[in-house]
Length: 167
Image (cartoon, rainbow, N blue to C red; front, side):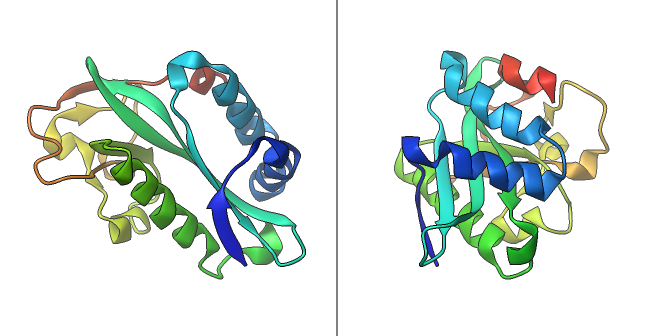
């Protein structure tokens, strides 16, 4: 198993991963739409690939804003059902976080399980004055600072790029 940056030729395999992982096409459609939306750029994506070349996992970071401040959204993360619970999703997330950190990004927002994402350093966004644009429990709307004091002066309502409205 290797984890590498996604490439243009990976699109079909990535689509299959998300359709299988979520048992419907919304997340796969989101990935396709984010690739085409200039406002969502840059996009950082990683794939998990078997030694036979099969894509079994995918993660994506895309451009969003917190108020007027540029940020990233972690979504979606998908792993083929037969490959779940083997640490693949966690490693995909770790590596894409490092990609964002290496690129000089300051923070990442995620809507996800409050028992899973804190292992990567995510904290409740509301504790920093960062709010979702829709009603969700505060414990599932999380933010990660990628640098020391990366959330200083950051607050407001998150603005997702238009493709997220379709999910």
